[in-house]
Length: 111
Image 1 (cartoon, rainbow, N blue to C red):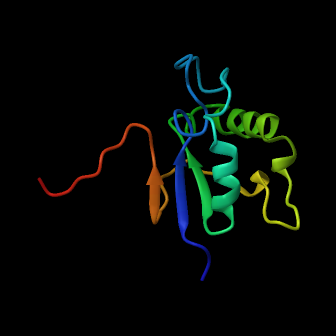
Image 2 (spheres, rainbow, N blue to C red; image 1 turned 90 degrees about the vertical axis):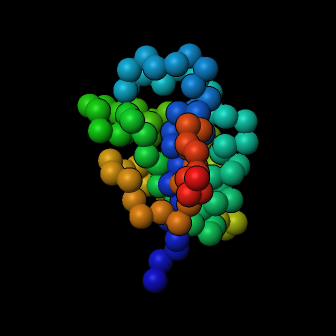
């Protein structure tokens, strides 16, 4: 059995999204502070999956992958210390994740 899935929303969780929506393939802002380090740590314990409203739009996944590689620097590559961000999976459908992190979500508690 593989690692449990951690699903991360892209805009507002990874990309700081200060400029708002500019199109699926336009990603103008830097990462959220700490996002790169968080993902590197998470990859040691989870199959980290990135899902976004961009994912199903033309050029969206390619743009997120390009953005990630540009902002990851050396963190893109695997090292003896662990996997690099090249191990992230970009998907078009919500996976059966153990945990999903989204800046616009609220947990339903029955009330």
